[in-house]
Length: 51
Image (tube, one colour):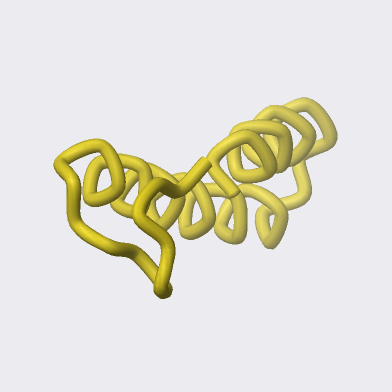
């Protein structure tokens, strides 16, 4: 999810499409939060590790 968010950020920035930029930011933040929670040892969505 984090990687998809970063890709959408780049595509949205290059093409100038603001909805891709917004969705990319949202996905990047959610992906980063899930990655941090998973690396701290918290179970995320029933999984011990999230990647």
